[in-house]
Amino acid sequence: MLIRYPTFPTAEETAPKPAEPSDSKDGQSEDKDCTPGTLVLGHVSVVTDIILSPDSRFIITADRDEHIRISNYPLGFVIHTFCLGSTSFVTSLHILPSNPDVLVSGGGEDVLRVWLWKDGKQLRTIDIGEVVRPKITVPPPNIKANKPAKKKRKLDTPEDEPEEPPKVLALTKIDSVGDFILFCVLGATALFHVHIKESVDVIEAPLAVTALDLGAPVLDFVVDKEHPDRIWISLDTQDGPLLRSARLGSATSSLLLAPAPSLTDVPEGMHLPLP
Image (cartoon, rainbow, N blue to C red; front, side, top):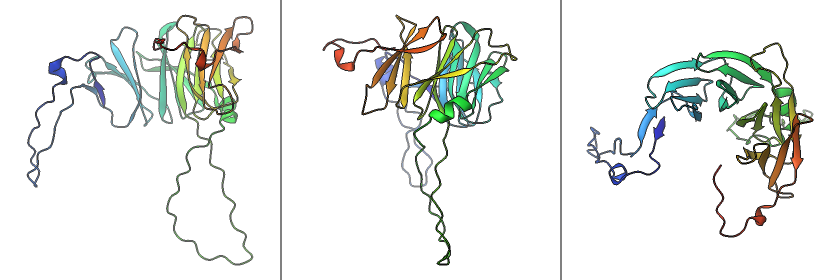
């Protein structure tokens, strides 16, 4: 479910609501609807990402069961349409600022999907698996299950070799700058980008995916609002800088690493604005 909370709640909004008695057999009461928030909408499956349309008239949500839902906002129970066609979980949504009618989605598939989201129509897909999968160096958690006991083997039978865990592709973020779509993937040591030379709805035109290798798993990235050609990248490493910077190369139409100050260069007492 999705619940809306006020940024600056009033005293009346923060006051706990009285608990309603339940019909439980043990006679104990249960708290029902005691949250100060307002329910916007609910999904049958786990909600994985949420964005608002630029005009705040619609709320777009994705879930673990491959669904992308477009609902009215704030009346989220009024469903406008669905964007259906994904074959795996969807974890990231992004509306192109240069074309607000276009939505880019990604998740557990080897493709990005491009939609006319108001119509629920898929425009095209962008293949990413061939470039992304070799950069995934962090395997998923190894969850051991209780397996049934095996029968005793003969002495001459060699033991099975442990299998290497499969590489799980899961997008964690999609953003864009001008004609570039940027995205990062869980456990991957690169920031990926696609240069949209022409309109994204030209299905026949192949779009190449390029990886900017950073030598360590990418945790997150953000586009600098004051300098849109600069991207700040957070890394998961103990042997190098935790923060890297990249710039868009206008001549080469690609991302280029740029010098970035260390985190210790920020003066004490200085409050940085949130992105």
